[in-house]
View 1 (cartoon, rainbow, N blue to C red):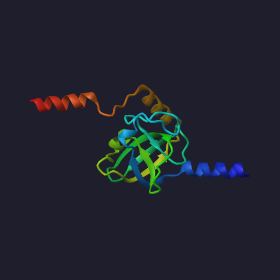
View 2 (view 1 turned 90 degrees about the vertical axis):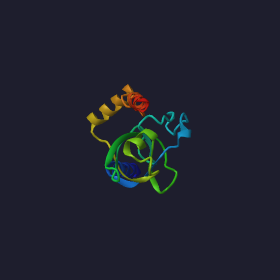
View 3 (view 1 turned 30 degrees about the vertical axis):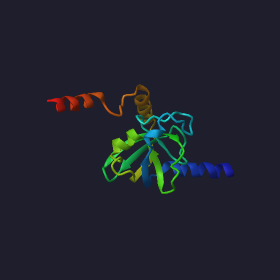
View 4 (view 1 turned 135 degrees about the horizontal axis):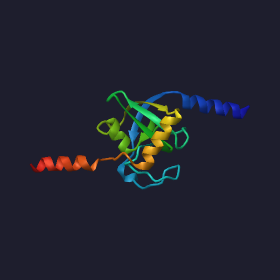
Length: 145
Protein backbone atom coordinates (compact mmCIF):
# COMPACT_ATOMS: atom_id res chain seq x y z
CA UNK A 1 0.00 0.00 0.00
CA UNK A 2 2.85 2.39 0.84
CA UNK A 3 4.47 1.71 -2.53
CA UNK A 4 1.20 2.53 -4.31
CA UNK A 5 0.94 5.85 -2.44
CA UNK A 6 4.56 6.76 -3.25
CA UNK A 7 4.06 5.92 -6.94
CA UNK A 8 0.84 7.92 -7.02
CA UNK A 9 2.57 10.96 -5.48
CA UNK A 10 5.47 10.73 -7.96
CA UNK A 11 3.04 10.44 -10.89
CA UNK A 12 1.06 13.44 -9.66
CA UNK A 13 4.24 15.52 -9.30
CA UNK A 14 5.57 14.65 -12.74
CA UNK A 15 2.24 15.09 -14.53
CA UNK A 16 1.55 18.62 -13.34
CA UNK A 17 2.69 22.02 -14.46
CA UNK A 18 4.50 23.74 -11.61
CA UNK A 19 4.60 27.52 -11.30
CA UNK A 20 7.16 29.36 -9.24
CA UNK A 21 10.41 31.29 -9.18
CA UNK A 22 13.50 30.23 -11.13
CA UNK A 23 17.07 31.34 -10.65
CA UNK A 24 20.35 30.24 -12.21
CA UNK A 25 23.68 28.80 -11.13
CA UNK A 26 26.69 30.96 -10.36
CA UNK A 27 29.58 30.78 -12.84
CA UNK A 28 31.92 29.77 -10.03
CA UNK A 29 30.19 26.36 -9.83
CA UNK A 30 31.57 25.35 -13.25
CA UNK A 31 33.16 21.91 -13.01
CA UNK A 32 31.72 21.11 -9.57
CA UNK A 33 29.98 17.76 -9.18
CA UNK A 34 26.20 17.85 -8.99
CA UNK A 35 24.00 15.50 -6.94
CA UNK A 36 23.81 13.14 -9.93
CA UNK A 37 27.61 12.94 -10.10
CA UNK A 38 27.75 14.85 -13.38
CA UNK A 39 29.97 17.94 -13.54
CA UNK A 40 28.13 21.25 -13.90
CA UNK A 41 28.74 22.87 -17.27
CA UNK A 42 27.20 26.35 -17.70
CA UNK A 43 27.04 25.84 -21.48
CA UNK A 44 24.65 22.87 -21.23
CA UNK A 45 20.89 23.09 -20.80
CA UNK A 46 20.59 21.55 -17.33
CA UNK A 47 18.85 22.33 -14.05
CA UNK A 48 18.29 21.43 -10.41
CA UNK A 49 14.92 20.35 -9.03
CA UNK A 50 14.05 19.02 -5.58
CA UNK A 51 12.04 15.95 -6.58
CA UNK A 52 12.03 15.19 -10.30
CA UNK A 53 14.21 12.18 -11.20
CA UNK A 54 17.67 12.80 -12.64
CA UNK A 55 17.79 12.92 -16.47
CA UNK A 56 14.17 14.07 -16.68
CA UNK A 57 13.72 16.61 -19.48
CA UNK A 58 11.65 19.63 -18.43
CA UNK A 59 9.99 22.32 -20.52
CA UNK A 60 10.52 25.74 -18.90
CA UNK A 61 8.35 28.71 -19.95
CA UNK A 62 9.00 32.27 -18.72
CA UNK A 63 5.86 34.42 -19.13
CA UNK A 64 7.78 37.69 -18.70
CA UNK A 65 9.80 37.07 -21.88
CA UNK A 66 7.36 34.64 -23.52
CA UNK A 67 10.26 32.24 -24.16
CA UNK A 68 10.52 28.48 -23.69
CA UNK A 69 13.53 26.20 -23.31
CA UNK A 70 14.21 22.58 -22.36
CA UNK A 71 16.54 21.45 -19.57
CA UNK A 72 17.68 18.12 -18.15
CA UNK A 73 17.59 17.61 -14.38
CA UNK A 74 21.07 16.77 -13.04
CA UNK A 75 21.04 18.24 -9.53
CA UNK A 76 18.99 18.73 -6.37
CA UNK A 77 17.86 22.17 -5.37
CA UNK A 78 17.22 25.00 -5.33
CA UNK A 79 18.20 25.47 -1.72
CA UNK A 80 15.95 28.51 -1.34
CA UNK A 81 12.35 27.47 -0.64
CA UNK A 82 11.16 30.50 -2.63
CA UNK A 83 12.32 28.91 -5.88
CA UNK A 84 11.25 25.75 -7.74
CA UNK A 85 14.16 25.33 -10.18
CA UNK A 86 17.77 26.44 -10.66
CA UNK A 87 18.82 26.71 -14.30
CA UNK A 88 22.21 26.52 -15.97
CA UNK A 89 23.56 29.76 -17.36
CA UNK A 90 22.84 28.67 -20.96
CA UNK A 91 19.19 27.93 -20.14
CA UNK A 92 18.84 31.20 -18.22
CA UNK A 93 20.30 33.13 -21.15
CA UNK A 94 17.99 31.35 -23.60
CA UNK A 95 14.95 32.34 -21.50
CA UNK A 96 16.12 35.94 -20.99
CA UNK A 97 16.36 35.38 -17.22
CA UNK A 98 19.86 36.74 -16.60
CA UNK A 99 18.98 40.48 -16.40
CA UNK A 100 16.29 39.70 -13.81
CA UNK A 101 18.23 37.25 -11.61
CA UNK A 102 15.03 35.32 -10.90
CA UNK A 103 11.54 35.28 -12.33
CA UNK A 104 8.26 33.38 -12.49
CA UNK A 105 8.38 30.28 -14.68
CA UNK A 106 6.09 27.37 -15.56
CA UNK A 107 7.77 23.97 -15.68
CA UNK A 108 6.44 20.71 -17.07
CA UNK A 109 8.21 17.36 -17.50
CA UNK A 110 8.47 16.23 -21.12
CA UNK A 111 6.55 12.97 -21.63
CA UNK A 112 6.68 12.33 -25.39
CA UNK A 113 9.33 9.72 -26.18
CA UNK A 114 10.07 11.25 -29.59
CA UNK A 115 10.72 14.68 -28.01
CA UNK A 116 12.95 13.12 -25.33
CA UNK A 117 14.90 11.20 -27.98
CA UNK A 118 15.51 14.35 -30.02
CA UNK A 119 16.58 16.32 -26.94
CA UNK A 120 19.02 13.56 -25.95
CA UNK A 121 20.40 13.48 -29.50
CA UNK A 122 20.91 17.24 -29.57
CA UNK A 123 22.66 17.16 -26.22
CA UNK A 124 25.00 14.31 -27.12
CA UNK A 125 25.84 15.94 -30.47
CA UNK A 126 26.40 19.27 -28.67
CA UNK A 127 24.40 21.08 -31.35
CA UNK A 128 23.70 24.02 -29.08
CA UNK A 129 26.37 26.51 -28.06
CA UNK A 130 26.39 28.93 -25.16
CA UNK A 131 27.85 31.75 -27.25
CA UNK A 132 28.01 30.96 -30.97
CA UNK A 133 31.50 31.72 -32.30
CA UNK A 134 30.06 33.14 -35.51
CA UNK A 135 28.05 35.71 -33.53
CA UNK A 136 31.16 36.78 -31.64
CA UNK A 137 33.19 37.06 -34.84
CA UNK A 138 30.42 39.00 -36.60
CA UNK A 139 30.08 41.51 -33.75
CA UNK A 140 33.87 41.93 -33.57
CA UNK A 141 34.18 42.49 -37.29
CA UNK A 142 31.38 45.09 -37.23
CA UNK A 143 33.14 46.99 -34.45
CA UNK A 144 36.34 47.15 -36.49
CA UNK A 145 34.59 48.75 -39.46
